[in-house]
Amino acid sequence: MAAQSSAAKQNESDREIVISRVFEAPRELVWNAWTDPAQVVRWWGPKGFTTTIHEMDLRPGGVWSHTMHGPDGTDYPNKSVFVEIVKHERIVFTHGGGKEGGPGVHFQSTWTFEKESDDKTRLTLRMVFESAEARETVVKEYGAIEGGKQTLERLAEFLPAAPGKNNSASESNPELLISRTFDAPRNLVFKAITEADRLAKWWGPKGFTWISGRLDLRPGGLFHYCMRSPDGHDMWGKFEYHEIKPPERLVFATSFSDPEGNTVRAPFNPNFPLQVLNTMSFTESQGKTTITMRGVPLNATEAERQLFAKWHPSMQQGFRGTFDQLDAYLSSLAKENNT
Image (cartoon, rainbow, N blue to C red; front, top):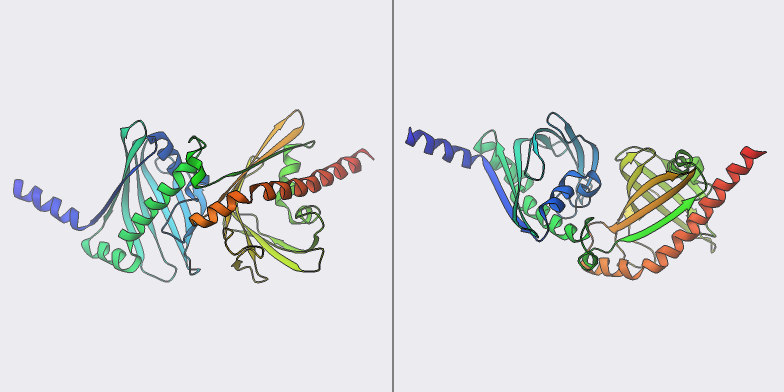
């Protein structure tokens, strides 16, 4: 019996990948970073990857559907089903996915969250495959071991900026915070930010002229638009939607683009972050709506994060002008309704 048990363990070890890392963060903070979709998209995947979450139903039997986007533009559709959730301790799910046109990937994944001290958490990722051959295919085809290490490294870089940490720690990933209250109901304000014909009436810096816009409002969809500057230059930009919860929450990555929709560097400084992840929350009180927007660099280098922090005053001023135009648009609707 002992020999059989030993052989079984050996066979299982041939089928598994185990990666562990200690994070300088409380266990609750690490848990929240894993279970909050708005946070997951900011660190999930190897370096250079971004993630679009289509669904994340965190309960036994719930589905987590997401697409990872490689730096070369390749998409990796994934679908997982949660098997076990023990809050702050363990997450178990079955996983299926892979590269479009490439070999499929299937395994069971267990993530454990161990409290090493009040401010330290050991996170261990364990993937068990159907066979040793399946494990080797994933390691060779997808670089699963290095990819897992890079994913945990990105989580470590993200955690200082996660909600709940002190301000001094968040300096490594500076957050832009903007808040504005509008004299309009929440449903209307949300529509003004998520409908193309409404965005055309107010979106963009003051002095710019709207040229065109195409909006696909869904997780993974784009808002691709063009505006003309006062000196006659066309500027293309886009939103990539990560999470949409009408009329409460909107998560999207912003970037400059070309006419074909490819992401390009900022025209004013090549060291500005390629993408900025924005989380907008909408709260209503007595008929007025407050938008709170938090923006952080996405997959940025240290130099890009530092430049982003330096540009905070300029970006805040720019958004004040943009929100002034939203305020004027909402006021015009109120006047039309009163006539």
